[in-house]
Length: 251
Length: 222
Image (cartoon, rainbow over all chains, first blue to last red; front, side):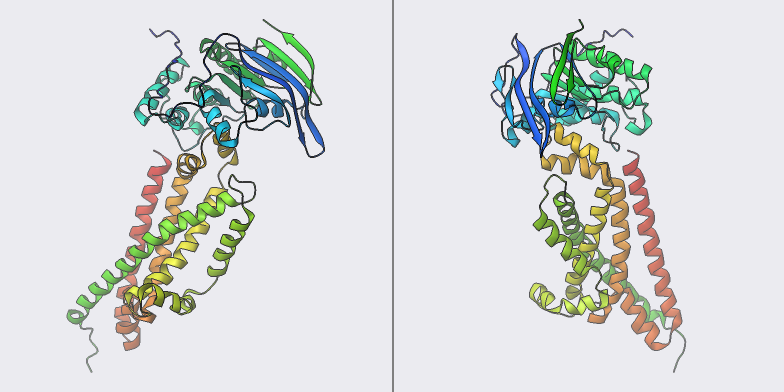
């Protein structure tokens, strides 16, 4: 292949309204969280968690089931609103925005990779990847072209018209990675991205995920209970009962 | 009395009846397709745990569907007489057949739509929500495309049910193939006419089913 693995960074956004006071891509932390707390009924899921994340860096959030790692991801990603604490994206407080604004924020500035990919089973791979771009207002042709570039750079060329059911687990997760990155997000959130894969395939998906987010300058948060998976990230935090019990910089 | 069937006399009447059936079925399906899809989506999205959860709306709509659906259609046609009168200004004739057919078909389709949506993986809706898709985008970009194949099959099923209904509204002078079979066949002890009409209905239903299957296959394997 005469093609260097490029990461398309331009997103067709011409037809979209101006972002919620678009945070500029400046140096400095992409995302910070201070004192995040969240309770569900009488259960404390988060009890004061701080996170710092730079663009192009990756963070593994580890811990056993029920330690609060998914709640942390949901609070950072604006899916949940924390009871206390702040989340800032490129210096702007976003943790407590209203539902509509958080939706817009997720659409514009975040990418998501889920455990089972959660691809639309009736849509071909290329349309699955194009979808977030179309959610942002790109027309079908622009979005499809961009999606094709992403498929090419992630080694999925030739699989454009396959449906998720016709892809292997690793291929489906690479489609999910492309879908998360197509809008040029500031932060990519991955919740157990290798949870449904075997070791070797999981490693390959983590390699693609960490390399492409780094190349795109996006920050990456990976929730996992698997130390091997965490080993692909630059930093890690270990959680227990809603607090961070250990922090490490791996590279 | 001449026992031989006078097809020269009957064929034009049969053609007219066929046209009446097609007309009633098409108009009713058009209304029921739109209304049933909207109603089915509304029940689905307001269901507990879904993204527009609303107990009051869900309960009212669900009750409405459950109340109308078990009513035998032949009774329903008469029971909605006052509503039919209000809507089309008369309770007999082909226009008067549309309201009961459309309403019954709409609630049936609503249930079919809802059942097909409930069968979808809730994870994809969750994922779309996480990605920041608006509610309308979820409906148009996720729910409908994901359920398109089964929805086409459900609509095919509905079409055949409405053809069935169209035979009943002969009771209120709406004409159609069912009415033709009864008046020119059964009531004159002419089984030839009954069977000929039945054969036409079978062919019509088969054509609908074949078309529906082909469209669904296309949707499922784009």
